[in-house]
Length: 306
Ligand SMILES: [Zn+2]
Image (tube, rainbow, N blue to C red; front, top):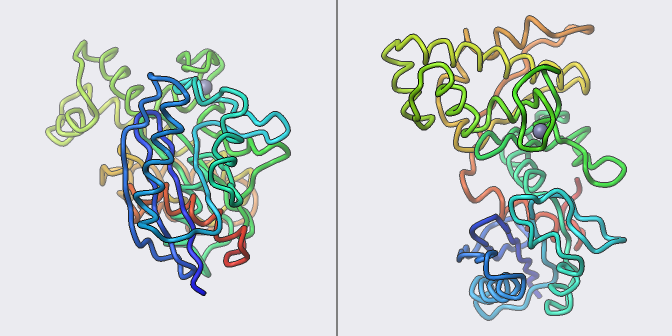
């Protein structure tokens, strides 16, 4: 009999679910509001509702769920989800398990996105890859030797919260100089405000950059430098072969131009000859989160290996 799995992408504002078959094809995709501000019971209710819609009456054999933060199973608790604090309630995941009655696999949402994009553009081509999600934050996932690298507790890959300047800008996490404090969408807007006194969003600032507005040029040149150095740090640490770039901010074509980020990155490579380390634009758009979550379920059933 055909087997199916469910992938769930639980975000701060919405929850999305997909039904996937064992060939990794997404058959249905549904989304609704998570309504986290109404409490955990409401979130659980919305998750069940959207899974039921996505399943369209079919039975499924496993569920994968991508969440903010990191799930520690001994505590049955998510850690590091300060923007969706209700998700950190102990027992949340067990309540989902009780209802689904099939295996429920949990993974960080950036790792889910990294997995999906890795299989979309790097499978059988590159084995050591970083996926970056530049958007509301600066999330990353690491694939090392074709495996999702989780570290000792599942918390690996928080490159966005590595510091590039001990006297630098204060990050939302409290630390100084985190990459996220420079290159998330809101951080870029804030840096532009500090330079120009104007509150603009990233696409607006990009338009000014194209028209050679001086503050926008300073801002983008500094951003190329920071991103190039940040990526070189990771390449030097893990000997990576490619970098996937996803998230809203990554859609600007300027990051991929020859004389911008890669110029700084290559200048800071150290050690062995590294050759080309391409920056690859993400392919899947906003379906990557649910797809990667569903892959967790396919792996649990033995249909994928990573
Ligand atoms: Zn930080």
